Image (cartoon, rainbow, N blue to C red; front, top):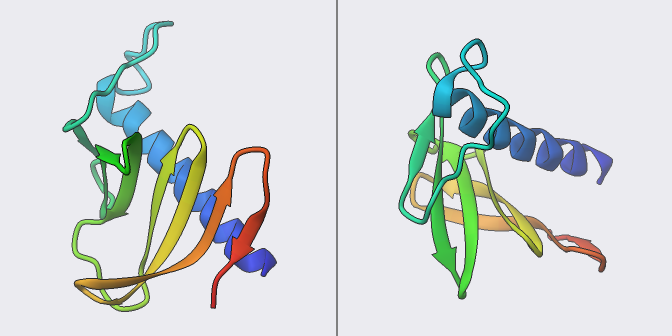
Length: 110
């Protein structure tokens, strides 16, 4: 169970880092936030991860997943109130393995 939480945290952090690096690059970063809007995507050079901002169930979320999902790979969907981690069973089918709500409980799914 702890391994899944570590994986979830690592994927979310990778997504945030991807957005930060892709928006302007760490070396040229000014002390201002980079704002992404629904429909915007980011990718980090040298990685196989891409992130997109989307509206899911009425909430704005950022989705981070491999550019070519394969069985066994993971993706995250995070927003203001909730986070999901999914594991791909095939390139087109994924199963939720972890979900949590802000200030509420977290659930490992099997």
